[in-house]
Structures are given as structure tokens and as C-alpha cells.
Image (tube, rainbow, N blue to C red):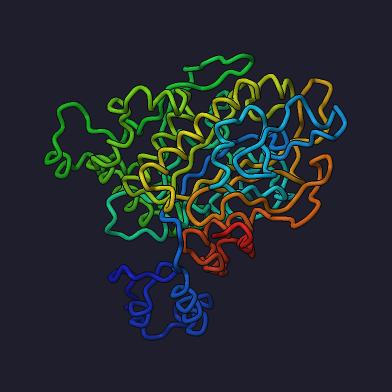
Length: 472
């Protein structure tokens, strides 16, 4: 008899070696699980954990293609239609400059590394490379598939101990694409893909009707909140909840939606997580900003992104391993600045500046910065040439990613763009390299193998190598 349950000491493919050996003949499990390959995976499993400076990650994701040459890699000597309208300012690191609208962030560059040579050729508005390191062009970037590779956060959820009472991966303020009109876009990247839906992030929700106008920028406001499905109904006690069959029936309705072969396993995981959310005071407390002093709320700026970042800090403080905070782009395009690039940035960058500096200050004063990795990235960059609408168009050939905090050698710049911030001049960095660097900081082997739906072993960083020049 083949036993698939029992010990929680799993291999990357979900089976334990001892339980698999109880099958008697490993060949019965198919070619992907013959003895040599199983032992190879087990050997790799033993090396997937390594000493890492970061206990957790806060990923600040600027969805839509942030114009990083107007933020972190200004070209003041370029022609007017290239350099744009902003001037560089000095930071607290000699020779390291930022945009004039990021003065607070400039005070944290001694804890920050800028990678100015990131590039990929996987198409525009495609977040899959930046979340996974998988650089393939997708004909459809408006939806995700369960055949895609897992995101970094999903890998953290996959490695989470079964006894942990908190999810390892939360995604705020909602799924990527939620800001689009109609809510029909779900950008690929943040999900667990072929690992199974049970390792997808826990998404919060938000009210998209709350908007704050700053100059010519419309910024989403309000606060993210846990799904109504994760709250106790009026008058329902915990004891009643644990014995109520209707809860199980509610989740069973979703069983038919689960993919073949993993549906029951995914469903059990969803049920367990839903119950833990309903009973987790840590999680609910992190989302409750009513007890946070007003001056702290003000420092983060009371935008949706700012409030989400504040909650992210509270979540990692509670023990969540990977928290993603996305600045989504609603109908007015936000980071997708095809028009009025500089007018929009004049309103948005001071808000981003306030949020980032408040996060860094709080992590530092609370003793969390030495164990929390902060990453700011986007799915692509913007064109070097300003178009006729005073905007910048899609560009994936060169842009900047920011690292700060745990595991990072502050005050460093890796790579360089050319004189127009158009192409990489030196030390190119792939999205796989970015993911590998994050894994390295977390103490997860970037070469760790997970198996796709066909049983093929896939390295989680897709061949990416850590950018060691920025590592402490």
C-alpha cells in the first residue's frame, strides 16, 4: 500500500522519503520518483536552508512600470527629452544621488543598495519575471495559470512549518490588477502556480472608491482589510465555529474548482488557513490601525499604499515571513505614465518618499531592520525618450531595483545604465538574479528544486545568481 500521509518532513515534491520507501517499489510512482531522482531531491532539500540575515521580507511593488530614471538613476547631462524635469539631490552616501522629490529616502541610503542594471525581455506589464525569475514572453498577461512557476512568497509559504499559526505570505491591498476598472485583470506572478493554490498568498481587500488627489495625481486612499470570509459572523463564538458543519460545507463548494489531482489537498489547506484566520488575534491585530497614534499614520501618509505598508510592518513584527505591498494602478494609470509623467510623479513621489522613510525609521527604531529585507521593484521601466504627451512608454531593457535592510551592504550601487538610462552599460542583472538575491538573504537556496506538474525539477530562481556585491 502506498502511503502519502504521515510525517510532515516533506521533500520538495511533497512526499517524505520514509513514507515513500514504504511503497516498496519506487518505480510504481513513475519516472519522476525513481530512487536516484528522489535521493537527489532529498540531497537538494537538505541544502535549501542556509544561514540568512533576513527573517522576513517586505516587498514594495510599484505595478505598471515605475520610471526609475526619474527616481533613482537620473541623467542630468542627457538631452532635455531624455533627462526629464527633475534634478538629482545628494544623499547621506557620497556619490549616491536620488530625485529631488525623495529627500527623506535620501537619508536612508547608508542602509540601501541600488541595482541600476535590471532588465528582461519577457514583455511589458508582465510581473511574472520579477516575482519568479522566469523570463518568458506571455501572450496574455491579464490572467494567471496554475502551470506558471511559484513566486518567492509562495515558496516561503511552501516551506512554512505546519505548526505555524500565521500564514507565511500575505499580499496587500488586494490581488495585482485589482485597481483596474471592472476588476477582470489578474496579473500573473504573485501566485503559487504549479505548487498548488494552497500556497497562494492571503489577499486583503480594499475600497477602490476612496481616492485622494495630490496635485495632478489621484492616489488610492483608505485601508486594506481582511476578507469578510475571514471574520466571525455576528454572535458566532469560537466554540460554535469549531463545531459548525456549515463552515465546512461552505468551503466544500469550492472543491470542484480545484485542479485535478490536488483539489482535496488544496481544499484542506484552504480550510485550515481560513479557520486559523478566524481565530488568529495576531493577524487581526496587525490589520487594526485604530490603536496606532495619528502621528504614526501621518508619517506613512494616509494613502492605501502607505496604510498597507504600515500593516506590513506590523505583520512582520507578528511573524509573517513575506509581505507584498503593491501600489496598483487604477483607471488613471498611476505608474503606467504614458502621459503627464512628471505631473503625476510630483504628487506621487512625495507620498512614496514618506512611506518608505517611515518604514525604514520604524524598522530601525524597533530593532527589526537588521532582520527585515525591504525591496522596492516594478515589473518594468519606462522609455528614455519623453513622448509627445509628456509621458514615458513601456521599457524592459534597463531599470532600477532598490534593496535595503537585512543582508544588504548599504551605500552601494551595482551596475550602470548608459548615458540615457536606455540600456545596461555594465554588470547586467536579470530578474532571476533579483529573486536569487532575495532567497539568499532569506537563507533559502536559490537552486532549490521544486517539481512542476509534469514532474520536472525546476530551480526556484530559474538559474539566477545572487548579486553578491550588494550583500553584507
